[in-house]
Image (cartoon, rainbow, N blue to C red; front, side, top):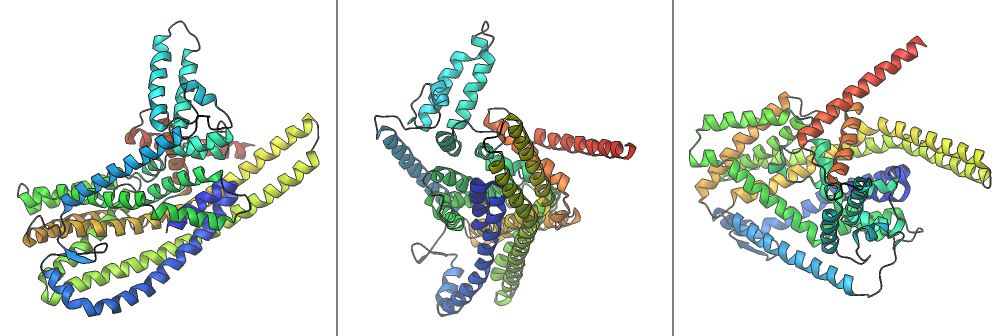
Length: 540
């Protein structure tokens, strides 16, 4: 699934809209192969594991878990893993800081860059570390703040320029792009470097209320990793290299890096602890089962008020239910039959989700073919026009600019038409991500040896109640049909998501409620504009 994110991003950075859909096509092909391969490997693993059934059953009855790295059965402790992860994060941060310092002092001569204006504004070297840039910004910001320069009419402009310089240089990928290409053109591809995937997807999908349960969406984490890696590596890539190979390498680096694995583990542990906190009133007895159930229903209704809240509630609810049913089934039913039943239900859902992911990917590629063909034809026409106009006078240059504008408008029009298919693909990725993450989250909570087996079973009962209410309310609100979202709604959310992430990058405060209000206003204005245009066309 990494390829579904990595390859379109790599393609877009290389060749704009054409590259995006070309990468999307190759990404879908790669993703389609994974479930098939996984089923084959899974069949082998089942057969291989039959010989170890006796040992596994004995360890399981004792509440032990298999450690894949140490290759032995151990007792698992949730709080202990959090401490271990924080220590690993600290060590990783120290290594990155040390390597950055070494890189900064490796050469006494400054690094060659396309444009050093932003470095000069901050009074730092082109080899400055992230810490040095941050320190310099605060120093310069205090010095040239408009309040400190009441007699300077250009103080506000200078302060804004300083903020723009810090925004670009404090971000790893935008700094690499600036060093190579100079100031970003807001109308071109460099604007992509200013996008924070975490803020963008948070606004796009409205995932704030469910973040305690699912953490940061995998699609945002992967996009962030790939964008950083792609921008840093872009200067070293030869243009003759194959895009699919580049994208595959980027995906592999993003997915297999120690930092990515550590971040996912931290996500799972944090969500497990949040879930433990959520069910604590039921566990401690401060809430009766009826009161706890009512609180779950209330929370589910609140989540479903968001644009995609019902889909989140349905996905989260189903996974919580089936994981709790499996755990309780193996511990309390005759021969664990209920556990096997829940496991079969989960496997069927996973199988369905994988094929839904493939179907959504294929649909997105089909929808993108029209965009691909139109943009390809437009670019070829642009190339022919450039040859004809080569050496022409100012009038020819004006005509060329007009043609470029028309081509961009055509590409945007076709891209908007493909938005629903792309969103369905994104949701299919999200469903797989949430299901896999919550599976591990529940396991950590249910096998935590810091409490008795009886307490773990009670935890599973509480999680089942929570999941059942989420699923029931989510389905009632239509959460099982995210494809009903129309193109205008998607476009509005995407545009506000971009505006929000750029505003936050410049230090502005934009709350989640602000973003939702902007989306509503945007949709209202768009509807009024369409109505006015239709009336004008009818009267004309």
